[in-house]
Amino acid sequence: MNDARVLFREFLRAPTTTATLTASSDALVAAMVAPLPLDGEPAVVELGAGTGRVTDALQRRLAGRGRHVAVELNPVLAERLAARHPAVTVVQGDAGRLPDLLAEHGVERADGIVSLLPWAAHAAAPIPALAAGAIAPGGVFTQVQLLGLHLLAPARKIVDDTRAAFGDVTPGGPVWGNFPPARVVVARAR
Image 1 (cartoon, rainbow, N blue to C red):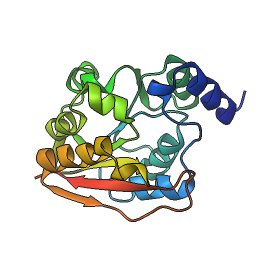
Image 2: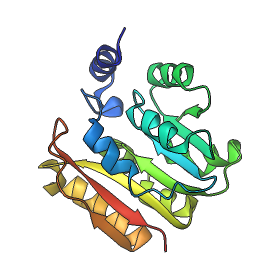
Image 3: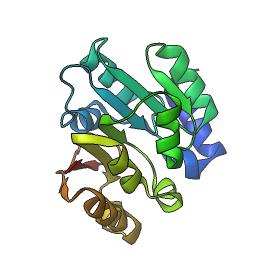
Image 4: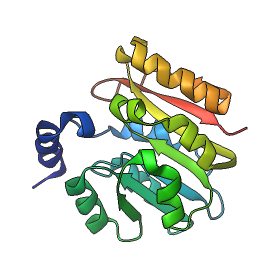
């Protein structure tokens, strides 16, 4: 079964944890990974890896260097991702346990953290604060927000929480090539 069908099925089965009907577009993926410091041997963490569109892009950019940990709550998506990317440490688990998950897999600090997590994950755990605690000096955290919805209170709270955790936060411009259109919030470690 192709990724689109699996994602749609998993969304219908568990909409609050899968949180999307469609995979991220190439344009959105590019906007998410472009700010990451991927020189040398970086440690990169992906939260809400889903079908692996960001995983694919990170693996191309890393080209066998560094460490890549992908966290995915949905067991079906995590299993598919692990089968497709044996070089990636795929963790089927809750991003709300980020410090423990990284410690269990020998990652002290991440140089970049990419998040596609939905509001429900942010409501259940302080994701920006957890990311700020796990990121290396000079590291970058990116979080996707859907346009239009970014004006609603839960999305504004995520940006406020990110600003409180990181200080240096820049909401990106619209990525119209995504369905639905989105933006990437970029936070840099102090």
